Length: 308
Ligand SMILES: [Ca+2]
Image 1 (cartoon, protein in one colour):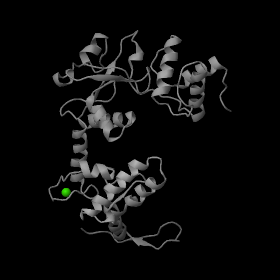
Image 2 (cartoon, helix red, strand yellow):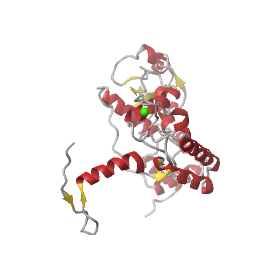
Image 3 (cartoon, helix red, strand yellow):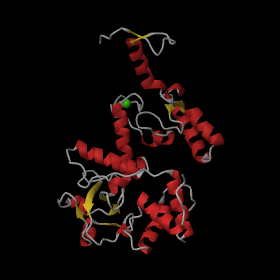
Image 4 (cartoon, protein in one colour):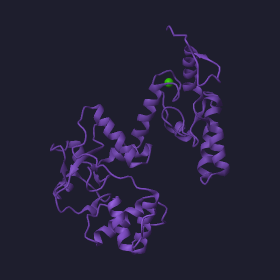
């Protein structure tokens, strides 16, 4: 392949000029071998100083086993500060249990081989219980008067939900395969945003990264690749919450006798449950979703004033 060899001047001339073919070769080298931190050092540091010492020691031993296998030198084991390596961002223990050879060259290379990375990611999902051919979630619409406290609650079949008036937003029926699965209702942007019935494949994605937002993003992107249209109900435009907003909400819920846990500004399960209970007690839509409107109501009820 012919490469251009023009000279690039970087910045204000304080760096040595480099040629494009040098950059290209450097980048290829970097992509294969040198992106990120030395994983042995990263997990050793966490083992020595971190809160999750046992976890980090296990990862350190796994990293040493990978090097000990002779397949990869230590210089290949580059990753994040927490030891997530290569295209799949597998930590060393996951590499040992789950990474596989996708291109058939006999070597498991999640850094340099996209086929190996894809096969390894697929293997992780398969081990997490991925059901081939099933949906990950479906957008649904809720009837008026719906009991929003069922959000993040029971896992039941689409038929069970249909008896409560919960139907697919696109008006289609459920596939035979999906009908047999149990689904949980989620309102990731509250009652004014789209509603989803989350099927087991959603929770398989969360075994890769346990974040509802991450799994929703992955699922919707996958649906887009399959030619499915986007959301029926658009994502609401919202004012982002500040840390002070979130802490005020937690302080107010605590003062009112609902138990949101420590007022740390992190809206987790405890905060959402407390909010849901307070909403229910006040006759509001009990979706457990913290919006600026809810925060201002909580402030008004407790006399908290927003920080200037
Ligand atoms: Ca391979």
